[in-house]
Image 1 (tube, rainbow, N blue to C red):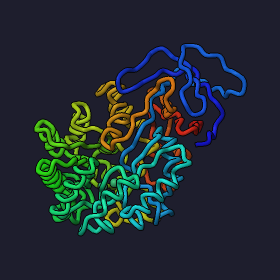
Image 2: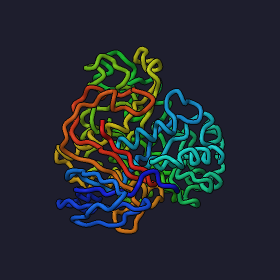
Image 3: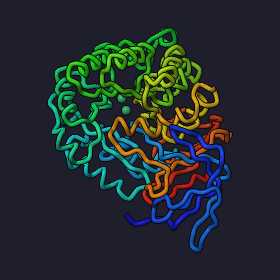
Length: 432
Ligand SMILES: [Zn+2]
Ligand SMILES: [Zn+2]
């Protein structure tokens, strides 16, 4: 593709990968979108744009494997362009987008529409296609055709695949197609009509809760069906201690199961809903759980039970969220706050070393979705994320590039920042 930027010289960056974190800054020359030279000192040549990163890190580009970009159908919440912009400013060069659009991503033309729309953007947008036609949970989509069109996985996210027969068939097909089925783990008979985690806080507040068991029962079912069929089940947005334990045990048995955790679930608990006076920006599904659950998902990341770190970026318009707590839709935006949350809860707290955190953002999501993992080496396509782990800053609405502003983090003090990305010949630099 045509380059949008001239040749570039990135000076003074420390290379960090899932394997190793460098401590000596280097200079990286980009020519025609490729890494041309890496050396401790490079002199700028004519017509080359130079940017000094002042000792910040550069890693292979990050991927968020769980976002909702709302296009087609709900462009008042987010479009592929605004979602990709938020991703770029959050440090992501790739995302996988969920199919609860209108029409849903259930036919090949919708898959191709998303791929075509994102072709010229700095972020790779990989569509996840529906498991069921119309996302109605009744009959299976043309999975082979959807994969052919470019779908990287199958999910009815927004809703679970409740019908166990359908899940079994989907896993059988997915095993033939070698692509995962991603399930929003929720037994609707157990969870309804909950608006937050069922527990001490919901009892105190007098709000109907959705219990952890609603998630865990579905995870257990999906693990058993994956074991039976040999298909690959990816557990979306895991949030409970027992859920993590189910995945841990299944991995020991060799079941093809992977999972992810959202930034908000490593950061907050249901106590926030009480403290923040029913602010609807603390309402999502799965809901914020207990402190024990929060610790358990961090332990899951540490021991490899949880493979990927994601956002479940779920934009909603202000008027949709500006209603009574029980009427508000689920979900918050997350792309531009994911990194400082990881820095605070995993790195600064010394829970995990930087390279292991990066594996959850670079290698693992792409392994799960069978995508190439970018490399920082001479001759490779330049697919890069620039970031630091120590900058203190305050997150404000001016940092939000998403079309929606539904985040509980406005006004929060942050540590660590994504400084921009380089991908497909585009350089996005975060100067705000
Ligand atoms: Zn979901
Ligand atoms: Zn989701």
